[in-house]
Image (cartoon, rainbow, N blue to C red; front, side, top):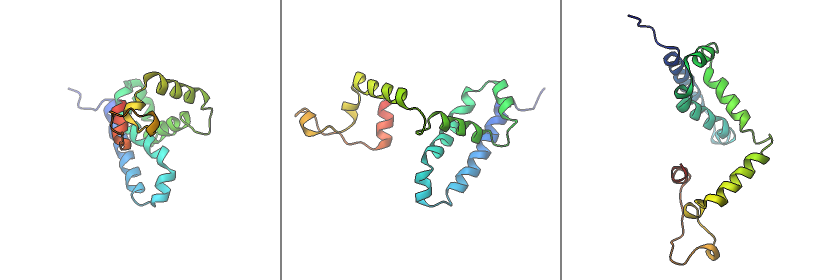
Length: 134
C-alpha cells in the first residue's frame, strides 16, 4: 500500500504554504500598498482556489520543481491580463458581451433616463455583482 501523496496533493500542500506566507506578508502592508498590488493579490487568490483542480499529475510534477509554484503561475496569470499589454481584443469582447447579453442592465444602476419607471434603481456591491454575473 502506497502512503505517498500524489503530485497533485503535494502541489496543493505547497500552494497552501505559499498562500499562507503571502497572506501573512500582506497583512503587514499598508492599505495603499495593498491597493497598488490588488491585481497580483487577486491572481494569487484565484490560482490558490483553482489551480489544483485543473492540473494533471504531470503538470503538478513540473510545478513542484519550483520553490513557490503559486507565485510562478500567478505571475504568468497577471502577465496574461496585463493592463499594459494589448487589451484591444479583450475590451472588444467585453463590450460586445455587455451589449449582447444585456445582463448589466439588470445588475447595475442605469441613468434615470434609461431606467424604466416600474423598475427600482439597482445598486449592488462588487461581490453581489460578481455573483450575479457568474
